[in-house]
Image 1 (cartoon, helix red, strand yellow):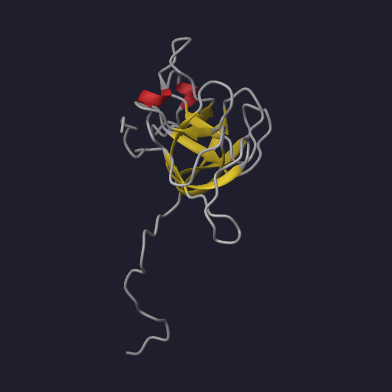
Image 2 (spheres, rainbow, N blue to C red):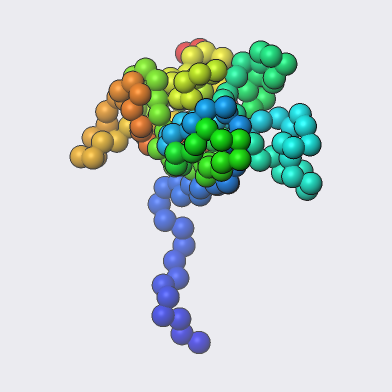
Length: 170
């Protein structure tokens, strides 16, 4: 039998697949496209579905107020759209893949990025000991490498579930 569809092997390079989920806004604030959020640890029956799926996102925190330290144990995602400040509002979140995300500071091309905790919902260049959750791709519309600008939305290779390890001293 002959197929009219081309059959080919994998292409050249990393073909990262996106992993997205629809989540409930538990941040207590509006979410905008590119914001970094973390998954809320299940502390009450309302935070999980009967089959155990985690479904609420919150602001990443550092372990204060009896919450877990997200940089040590957390799962992160990036909002793909704006979402109202409403505990019943839902937002599509990317947990892995290429994503447009807000940055703090001026990360350079190829920098490993980590999450800014508590308030900003952004990624910044990782320091020694930080959990790396993204790599800044740093390519502008002309195909040239460029450093990011504070509060800019940039494209990153993101893995908020497993991360890419820890930034070590050079």
